Length: 370
Image 1: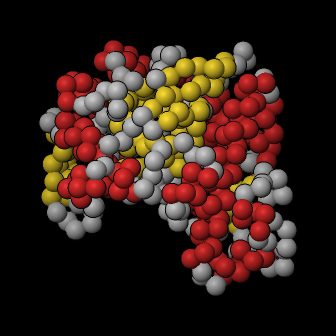
Image 2: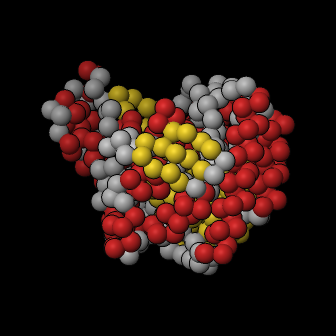
Image 3: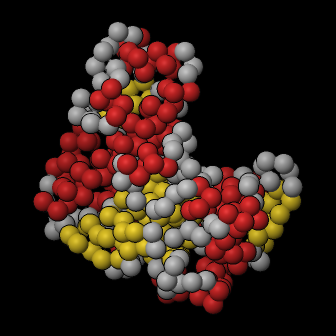
């Protein structure tokens, strides 16, 4: 399902093609997040027109609402959401981590209370596979035990062992109960900020044998130095011939840092979340449109962007939309930010192919200083 096209001589970067049930995906790729089956403020054709080849939805949220009976009745999420391209579903491990006050992890799975209506539920690793089989996602993730950064070593070991146990059960159940041509399954590497545990987790998950491998448990409160150190370390233990997915990461600079370490897939709510707060991502950096200096600025959001928003509207008008609290404002800026991320990833792929990746990375480090 995965073929490497270009490999950089100076670092781990590479381009590739993933062949999935709903079409090919060029990698490295940024996946817009459509938690509930749609990317916030978007209609499906708008994402297709940008040539987004894959989006991410969340099994935990879809399980709670609208529920598997509704999605099954519609014939799966693709038909239900009128999206004819690829979908990756997160298993819900991160959501259960972030809602830890409502969850209890046991060897057989997770007890949790719905954050929507307070109802009580239990999901085993096998249940999570069944949920994603009903959804019909092209790539499903295994249930894992995600932890906050810098927990004690003993707790990190226990979470790792739970993750490995669940991964084994998930893979066995998937291979015996799912259409392995139609759906693919990725394992998840955990281990917190401990390199020996990261190595152990990677080796154990790889030994099980998945269609691809994800790095979980980053962007959960660690420092940027820890993030970069663990990321560079872990990728050395993930097979070269399988797609590598860095979960929940997606600022413009993070794309470069991840791709430099051989990551093929990323996702994050960042571009649309900040858009709803008037923050624009551009080739000249990020800025907040509520700033007074844009009141009469008739220039586009980004002079180098050819998206519909930049070709049609001024900063002044979009700022007016935000100040007037028009829903259109969130649509406009979300559209632009996702288009920007898609275009940036296209530039990154081109730079890998022509050998200029490190130069492009240096350029954006100057633009997006942290």
